Image (cartoon, rainbow, N blue to C red; front, side, top):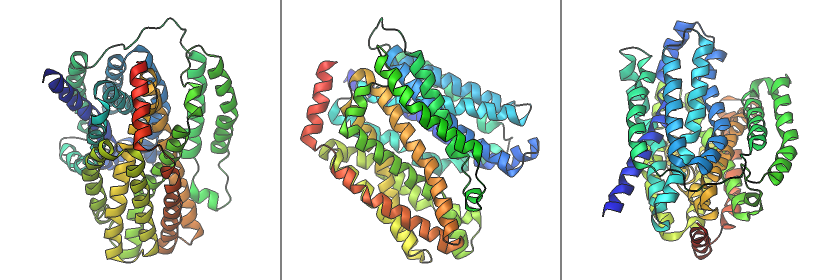
Length: 462
């Protein structure tokens, strides 16, 4: 019973840590007008309040995750919470807009360590037959954050936009105290030198990838105006990839084990994560379709997305329990099929209100599976204990890359289709078909028996 209570306390700690990081994406929207007024920022500059958080998250995840495999979950979770609090403090008291962006970057980098480390802790402390339910609860955080984030943001805005960020300070302090008490320390000791060359090379690749994808403005591309800095960043990231592989092969204890990339299961999971990121990014553009199709305001269009958010909040814990019972192949296949089907219905009947709400619920349930527990569950079973966080970090990077790529694809396809209702309908239809075709990858995953055997093998090796 004591062990069970300890696990529940750990799960609660991880839940609120991830919720804090997720809220800082959903809660910042109400503060943007005040930030724009105080710092006299233009629209493009203001967009970086979101973008730089995503960029930091993408770049910060793999290093922090890999460091937690080496130096322990507790140390890196505490460091991530501390960095997030420091970034929040910097944003709240920023004397200029560039300093505010630096604070958001610090928040994004630190948040990049919170979710992968939390997933790895679940793998370390929960038995295989209960990991899905635990991961499902953590995955539900994002739906909850987008439900309460705007409401909480509106309330805090009454006493000043800075409080949207200052509220993180006491929360982080409480979580740090419980982390020191509850989380496991270093799982192993090693005398192997730290793979600094691999860490730096990977950081450069991810920085180039994140900046390049963020800078690919669909409107400029459509007009033939090529954003050369973004293209150069992407080219540099691609050129550095072979160097990173060489560095990792020579390292005694690499940041990412080359054996990870020899696993068919991991390649399939990475492909599914990119697809999930693209699908999630497409949903962000649904309010633009609703505004064009029904003439509603932007706020009303955002409110109409409530079925998606509710489906994600409810579907994530349910899908987690399904993973424990049926395994990942069946559950992930259902998730991919639902996500693709929802977008196809949305794109095929963009002016039908009934079709919209059906699509919203279907796509929401599909995304609940893919963005919640399922893909993280696969990696917990597929890699050794000392590589769990690094593998979770890799998943976050592939999903984040899909999100950035999805934004570019929706913009390009919508513009090519003439914009407005027709253009967005075409974009959702094309992306929905592409996602639906990924069911072939989901069906290629290991069956329940093979998955359990893999988890047992890695548990025995630990």
